[in-house]
Image (cartoon, rainbow, N blue to C red; front, side):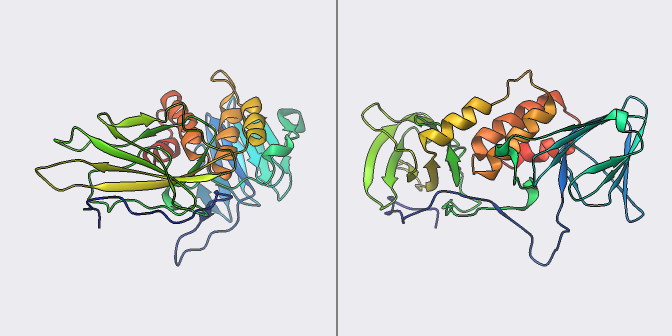
Length: 292
């Protein structure tokens, strides 16, 4: 139930190690690459059928891609992390580990950093949480968590955010460790919260937080979420590789997918949101932003 008077003790959770992606009753051929950037007139076919190629679209083996003059595309191979960039006019044929082209002078192959190898596709409409257990209120509850809900985080001092509930002026915030031990609680009069300096999160550990409304004249709601803090070594490696906002779109797409792959969905969402502003007509970017 979402109508609760007080929080319950949270069960132990695990750090996210991967996202499980799938739809009951539906099968998909395993993609070998994704579209990390695309501009201009680009056509694609697979087994005689036309395909749309929006940003982050998955590409299967034997997909044929035709680029008109001045069109550009960047393909990111998921297994290796290698990228192939092409400028039209050119015809490409996607193979399991490489791209064949009608004009090799217009095709650029870049070997990936090891961190980009073994990525998984981003399908916003088909997320299912993996190793971290999500505990959320029912869909009809007005109290919804906006951050740190079934994810990992890079931030040792993260911001907890949730939606406002009409007529509520105070919220009860609680933080638990993986054993269910209460670490901190506070009364909050806004819809965001940061832990005081006296409370430190430990890298490699998981936590559960909850927020509950405090109302004397109506129902009270509670919602809770689980999150993990990555180890300092992993955080430093990721931060060192972070592209700037001026970096090519393909670099930022690849980095966002890398973040998704290790459960850093809040951080990845910030990149998708910025890209959606730059490319307002990209349907897949709109879906990635709205899925949050």
